[in-house]
Length: 203
Image (cartoon, rainbow, N blue to C red; front, side, top):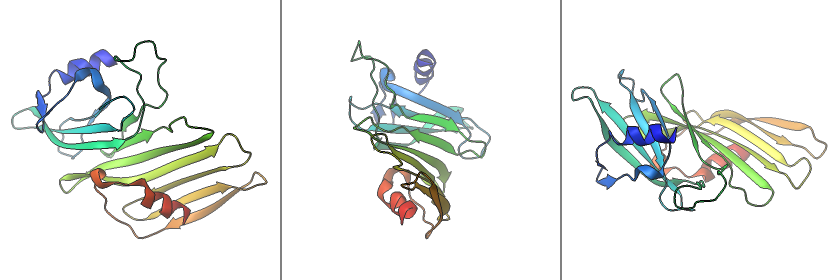
């Protein structure tokens, strides 16, 4: 997989929106038709510095000239940990973000929890291309405290419509479910802050 990403990156412009990409720092990538024009586009997660939030580079294919055109860089938006080329000897990280292409052209962005203490919060974003920008169309999370019994919660909702469902584990082990219903909103991925989404789920 790593060699494939490096080979793919060598085909890209040497500077994306004025910024070079170090091919050794490409963590993961996904291809698909993001904007519905029938051409294959590209998104990739690029490490900045070890331990720092990562960047996401988006490219849309220019069908007329047949090349991948850089259209947006979202800086330091994604937390993660990659034990890579500059830290030899480390075990593989289990907190690398994952990208998956959805049938409707959106991107599923899975963000595993950082391993801090006994609490884990995994998040999933649905990223879509709308009106010339990548936006957060969906949000989901699952939370668990592995050091306590029956401390867990989960939520999944459509950010654009404000509708979804959430659940919370009760002291007796049962789950209490509720409907999420808040005002829908359009949030550019570059401006996304998880606080509002957690509030919508837990409100």
